[in-house]
Length: 75
Image (cartoon, rainbow, N blue to C red; front, side, top):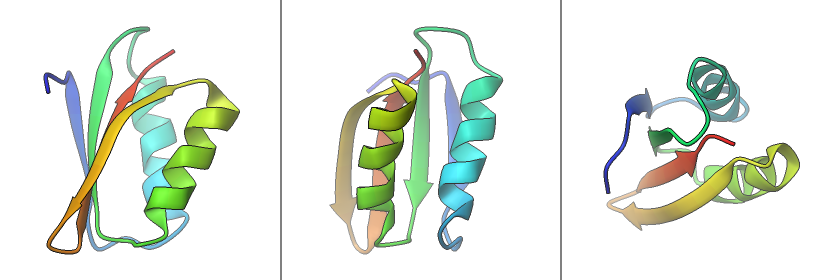
């Protein structure tokens, strides 16, 4: 998937991946896509809740080898 910016949040635990994502999205313009890499297993639940609360669209997420990958579209 195409993206405009990447955030490496691997090795960080809750709430840091979400906080860093929020900051990165604030620096982006509407319609741009942020690619996030994380290792926190709780991030799946956190990113779903984050997208609902903020209106930023969680385009996709997947897990492989204890790594989580998210694509979030800036509202």
